[in-house]
Image (cartoon, rainbow, N blue to C red):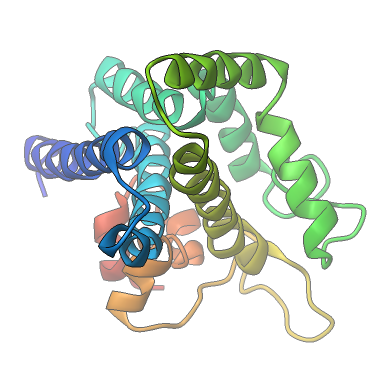
Length: 236
């Protein structure tokens, strides 16, 4: 596939993901009423926002590898920062540096996304993973946005249900299917190679819904320049 075609498809999908997330975020936080049908629709809104939030990270992840817009580093950086910045004020530059270190030393000491002290326990690993990227800078910016939302008339219940909850769920989704299960050590079984990554066997639609095919993690480590939407085509 040509670089131009990959860029067009990647940016088109990114626009759908980001546009969908922004639209639902604004609607749910400011306009959705938690009464009548609105109560029944709340779980659907939360689930879709969580999935799209994970998708924004996957778009930014492609940008880190130059897979979003091949040969156009500025486009990758701008779109990547827009995705992680809108999501939770993350720094694309910091995420990018740490992620490439992860690829250099996957699943071992020195991997910033790995919990070398106990590579089987979920809780300590997730806490360390979260705190590595969400620091005081991010907390201050998110707090400022929260206060602005309240000033603009957002309801506290809507902020919790349609901002905080989807953010936490999508973070868990990314961690479980994109880091913990692919890279955790087990008593039985070994990794296929030095990438210390495994693929989660599942049907195409389930692979998409869980984490935008990021569960095909061994394939990603073998071919990091392959965008998320082409990972099912990578053969190991």
